[in-house]
Structure formats: structure tokens, C-alpha cells
Length: 378
Image (tube, rainbow, N blue to C red; front, side, top):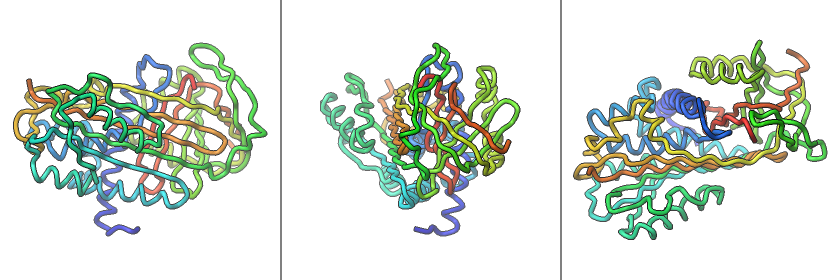
């Protein structure tokens, strides 16, 4: 479905800003991470925070805009632009892969949600609106059932036991589920056990392989390859640093300009790709990271969510969970973000992924980053 020129321009402007947010957030989480792997969906996090942005006012709204890099993108109306962007990326799923973007809002009865906020949540974010039962255990089960459905069963739980209490006013959720078949599948008969050098030692992993023409990039310290999914609308990008020092250099220098430079440097080249078959999941709280990105005002009792509901409110928790499986057939990835609002009280290359690497799943029409990963122990 084609969009009016203004809507398409607005969507691309928002995608630019959200890509800057995606890289800043990913860099913050991956730099000094205590877990061996980091895998997130910046698009899921952005969906939840943009919904929250609709209900924020004053300094709190400015802080969320700063964290989301909205000014960098230049979209005049972020909510309207999100509606256009999410419709565009989901519409692209008809080209050969499956992509679901789903949002929901769970609120206490008689909370006093502002009519304009409710209208925006339903129309711009297509959010399903449900009552947040007074019984925290029952509400958690209902929310987790929704998460399980929207992520194709890849994520069972986002609200932990006891997380909901009498002070919880509202829970915002944003889920993304992707299933893509490689444009050129890896031949399972060619998969062999190989070595992967992780920080914890050498791992024995099933290594998939294929040869042919790929979009490829190489410089003195890093090489990259793009693996398209069926239909060509989406692809996986893998960046392979030469060693641990180059891994840290890539992460330290990760920014929107660097990202765009490397995308533009990809050239179709003949070679061989050797990639581990892997499955992993990742979960983290995002409060500290978002605080560092500029959203601190939203997490304090003095936050201004007067455009969202009556009475004082602030963000008490932001939680993110993601999972991915990469096989000879393709990729399945899912993620969900929960925001709890509480009451204020060279030619002929050989690309062997046998050491820590970075991977990104992007929408090729808008270049919006859907998932991002730093894999040191797959």
C-alpha cells in the first residue's frame, strides 16, 4: 500500500532519528555488558516510548524527545510519523517474510486517561486497550498471555511476579515479531562443526556455509556482509571485527554517520559466508540506559504526564526482552518492551564468523533498524 508523499517523508525522517536512538541505546547496553550477548529490538523500545511521549508534557516530553533523538530525525509530528513508518514496515512483509508490530495499553479503571492520549494510542499506535485488573497476579497473567501471542511464543513473560502493585497505574507494551527465510538458503548438508573463539574460550558450534554473490564491505580492521531475506525487503547485516581491540573500536565509534558510511560501502562481491547456527535470548531493565540518553526526567516523581492521565505519575520501570534463532532456513526474532507508569509517591573474500560479531536486522526501504545484536558467545 503506497503512502501519500508527506506521510512517506515523515516516516523516513522519523526512521533517521530512531536509527540514531537505536545505535546510542545499543552502544550503551553493549559497552561493558555483563552478559556475553546483547540482542535488542530498538523498534520495540521506540514504539513504547513514543506512545509514552504522546502523554508527556513540558520538560518530561522534551527529555523523552532527547532520548529518542527525535530532533535529529526532523519529523514534525512523531506520533503521526510512527503511524506511517510502522504501517510501511509491516506492509513490506507481503514481499516474502512475516513482520508483526503490536502495541497495547493496560490501565487502571477510573485512572482518568486523557481523551487525546487515548485517541492517539488507538489511531497512531493501533494500541489494544485493556483494563488493568486490581489483582496484580491476574493482570500479569493477562499481559504475559498477550506477549506470548504477539511474539509467536518466543517470549513467555515480560511482567515478573510481584511487579504489579497498587501504585501501578498503567503498563505500555510494544512487541515486534519477525520471521524471514533467506533469499538463498544455507544447504544443511554443508553445515559442519567448527570453532568459534569467544572470550570464555573456544566453542564448538554448527557452522553453516554458502558461496555466491553478496554485498560485502572490508577495511583494515573490519569486514561486513549483507544477507537478504526472501523478497528483498529486509536483510541481516553482520559486522566482523578483526580482534577484540577492533570489536571495541567498532562499538566505541558506532554512530549514525559511521553506520551510513558502511552501508554505502557495501559492494556486490563473490565469496563464501560461514555463519554459526545459534539461538539466544536477552533481557534487561532500560532505566539506567535511558537515563543516560537523556530521559531522566521521566523516571522521577516530578515527571509531567498531564497529557496522559489525571494526577501525578512517573515511569517506574522499562523492561525489554528479545530472542533470536538463526538457522539454515532463515531467522526468527521477537522482542517486547514494557513501560510501567506508577503513581508518584576485496574480490573473492571468505567471511568466517568464528569470533564475536555484531548483527542488525533492518527494513531496507526505510533503513529502520529493527533488531541489533552484539554476539560474543552464541
